[in-house]
Structures are given as structure tokens and as C-alpha cells.
Length: 194
Image (cartoon, rainbow, N blue to C red; front, side, top):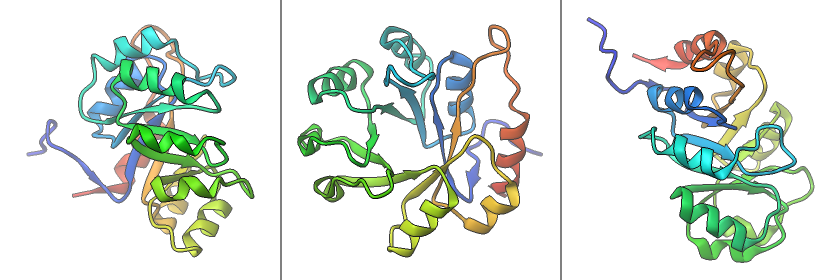
């Protein structure tokens, strides 16, 4: 008999990014995602209001709560980290202020080709890349903890790459509490370990 409440193990860790609604937040928890990400970059269409993010955060349990940022000040990141009880911060690899290390929170660097603040590498926990070429480049350099995040995946390609992590991008609901997870479910079923 299949256990619907048991933890599912996958070939890769799962990161759900850009959560904008409770439906995606609870989905992230339900699939046992490693990370549930909330975007706080006002230039990004997935940006969420801090109060709404905090409300959603209160309803989900399990994933590491991740703040996804662009280039705010350290003080802004610190304030959001405290309010959201963030366990992980995601910033661009060229984030200019290395004092972010003082926050002592796991760090995901979003890879920007030829733009890496090398002072951040000592605190690096994970890389996040958005294409296979960057994945291959970092992998060839010896990095293991790489999350591949794309709008859509070809299941066979994901299985062949065997990335440490796979990033899924949250989407708006079709109606309150309604969202089509068919593509995500197909991918997760293909990478599930029995």
C-alpha cells in the first residue's frame, strides 16, 4: 500500500521559487521540497509583499524558508530575514557587499556569468543556475551543490544531468486555491526514488 504521508526521496533536492500564494507554499511542503523561496526583488514579477509572505510562511512547515533577493542593502535583507525567520538567502553572485556573511544564514548564489564576487565564495552553500551550459561549467570546476532552475524541464535531460537540486518556479493561481501541477508532478514522479 502506498503511503501518502511519507517523505518522498528524489534523485535531486527540490527548490520551489517565487512562491506568491498559499497553494504553491503548501505544495512545496507537501512534496517535501528542500527550499520554499519567496522573492523580495521589486523588479521581479514574482515579488511578494512581506506581510503576505509571512502569512504564507505561517502555513507551511518543512522546507527551508528562502528569501530571494537582488541588490537590497544588508539592513533590508536582515530585516526581512528576521521577520520571515529565513533559513536561506539567495542573492546574485555579483552581490557587492560581502558583509552579508555576517548574517550567518545559508547562502545560495544565483550564477551571473563572469560576474562573481569572490569574497562570497567562502560562505557559498549552493549555486543556482538557469541553463545547462552554466551547470556544466560549474560542475566542471568541481562544484557539486548546484540547483538547476528553468521555466520548463525535459525529464530525460534532468535525469541525464543528475543535478544536486532542481528549481521549480511558482505560478499564479488559476483561481483561489486552484493551480495545475501536472508538469511538476510528472517531473517529480520521474525522479522519485522508491
